Image (cartoon, rainbow, N blue to C red; front, side, top):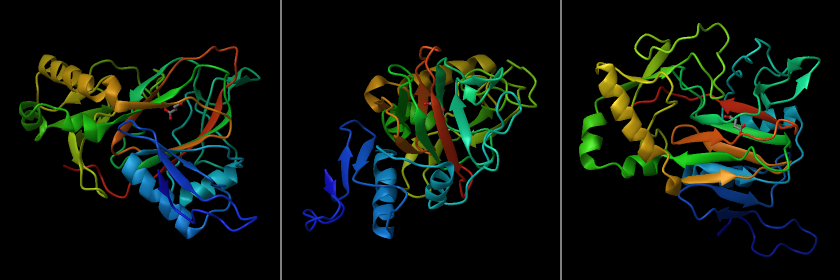
Amino acid sequence: MKLWAREKPPEGQPAPVTTVPSGKTLGAEIQGLDLKHISAEEFGAIHSAWLDYLVVLIRGQQLTDGDLIRFSGRFGELDWAPVQETGRRFVEGHPEIYVVSNVIENGTPIGSLGSGEAVWHTDMSYLETPPKASILYALTVPPVGGDTYFCNMYAAYDSLPSSVRERISPLNLKHDATYNSGGYIRQGMTPADDPINSMGVYHPIVTTHPETGRKALYLGRRRNAYIGGLPLAESEALLDELWQYATQHELTWRNEWKRGDLVLWDNRCTMHRRDAFDPRFSRILHRTQIKGEIRPSA
Ligand code: SIN
């Protein structure tokens, strides 16, 4: 456990900010913060924890969309959210906010991804320069289900046999733009299940994190993924093998959401997925995504 501020605050002062690692290969909770009012020192602690633990949980927040955008903006310029499956942008006046929800109002979903499983992915890797971070803030959560899992893609790379590392080091992977992680077609896309010809962007399979210098597997999403230049069957077999390493249980950590939780993750070295939940319960989370500064590179 790291203490980032005074160990014993003077009488009447707020408790110190502490970082509590999850004990897994990624994930830490930072306690003692009100994200509406953080100092430069506290932001520094969050930023370091994000690079060290890849996923950071901060509980007990009460944020407006404006607060969420202001906090997110401390990490860099924000990307506009992907357009909802219905073609709608989400929050009037806040194009940066992506709403993840199963709630339907007047016959129209207020957000994306419904109540089914969202499969393993990293956010918006179908862009040439995908977001470096995402931040998800829980407004309404079901009593059970809808947990979000994260996996450590540095550890996944480190766990590969050296023969596999050598084989993949020169290869590029197409990240499909057709479907989102809930299996819904993205706005403006035509349904396609041909990995060779589907729309998408190529990135190296092994990337070097621009801030930590560590190597990570960069897989994006399994559906319609294709390793450039390989016969399709060979690409499929190699991807299946890599995905087994990437999603091994020992390399994951999950958040069982409480209202007021904020989770920040590094898209350059993690993937995430979400469990399905009972559609009779409402789940509403607001997400921001922080622009990457450079394209993923080997
Ligand atoms: C997402 O993929 O950003 C949403 C995950 C979730 O619903 O927990």
